[in-house]
Image (cartoon, rainbow, N blue to C red; front, side, top):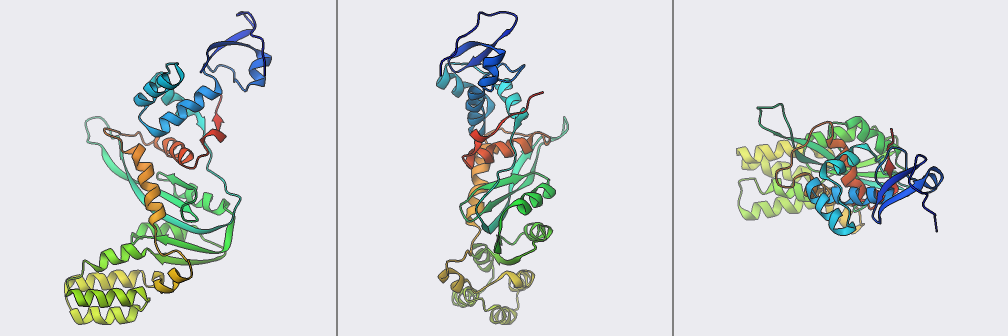
Length: 305
């Protein structure tokens, strides 16, 4: 496509692009999606979003300058991120598996107080499919799940944290669900029981077959504090302990590894050295990072005043 640049004047405007400074008429700007009162071109903004989703704002400034030859300051890129319209990702395919986990992020506190680590929640669909993350917004999390094209049976996976299963309960599914305690988290807790190795192996074999009652009987015979704690843990999750061997044979999910990987990928941006986040801007960075990881960042645009 060829355009003619008008002579700089009253009815034209200058836009910074990866090609340098360009002058557009109002008609040309409209055709190229260059919005009013915006200094940078849409494509340059997308370049900035991508760099900000991967690294600190300062690093993004350096990377954008290196890759495009245009310097966009760290503060300007931060403002770009804050005003970006980044809606939750939508799916067209059926969703039969939801895995949920929590991550930690360091947030700023009032001046004079130490920063604090606080939790956010990440959710991933269909194993290694797309994911999202929310900070202190269970309503938005549940609303996104309800917007998904859910299959007639949905498998819900998580570790032993009570908050995970409380969130699943808030989703109020209308169809059938099957809650599954992550097998690897279950094994991790089993190894905390003070018992001979052969007893642990026997307990593991029973759990793998979903034989919960046999495990509880053996734990009662051990009669020590670690066995009692594990018994209480099993009782809490009794309805979430299936026959793992059968599920694996049938190709059904037994672990929450995909969402744990998802959280680690998000943390690679949120937990860069020295990073602290304002609570009001943290949700936007979570959206940006998720859009980048979902390979859908280029589908969004900026909010214009």
